[in-house]
Length: 69
Image (cartoon, rainbow, N blue to C red; front, side, top):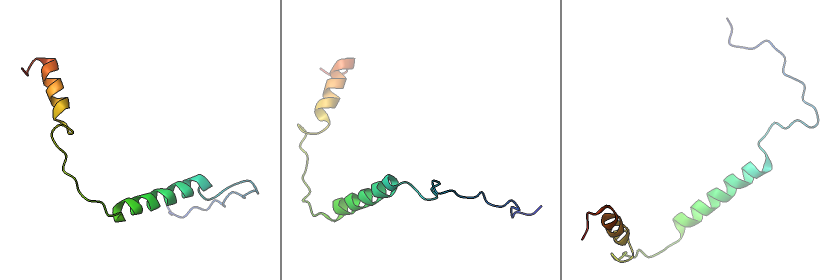
């Protein structure tokens, strides 16, 4: 058996598209630009204190299940 197809390709009419829709290309370009901007933007690193982090949520869950005092 041959891997090459012997069937002729279907005729393409004026309304048949062969590429991706315009919004797919636009979405990919916008995503790339935003990711590039986020990666290259200089921003200082800030430490998160315990009152702003995950600690209050964990304490609440511990009290909810009866593990905390």
